[in-house]
Amino acid sequence: MYKYYGIAIIAVILDQCTKWLIVKNMELGERISVWDPWFGILSHRNRGAAWGMLEGQMWLFSVVTVAVIIAIIYFNHTEAKGKPLFHVSLMLLLGGAVGNFIDRLFRGEVVDFVDVYIPVINYHFPIFNIADAALTIAVVMLFITIILEEKKDKKKVK
Image (tube, rainbow, N blue to C red):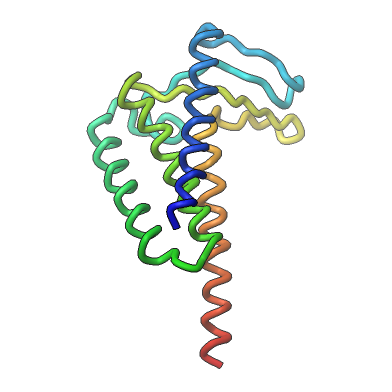
């Protein structure tokens, strides 16, 4: 069970290293085109939650994040036993939560930098970071885990 914590640690390290590179090497608002116009690196800061919601509510983010971290650790030790996909999704969730929490705690804002544009529908996706990606992947994996567990439970009942 403890081996899965390595996933969270790797997510936090990747997140913090990429954010450090952005802060140290790019000016705020600077964009480096990687695959024009679809993908670029854009130095951006977010003082709120997802998509800038609740800007400036650091106390709320701190309380919620600590509660979420406690819940993730609890579920990892109680509900995820024998369920590798559940462990992995919880650890990605933990890594993402901790990665953005570190930013809020030490910078007062979250460093975002992944800039995605979908020209076919003229949609500029909200700028995000590695922690946000880990959180998103974790949520998708949690849904898959829940669906698979429900199917498994239905087979046991029959």
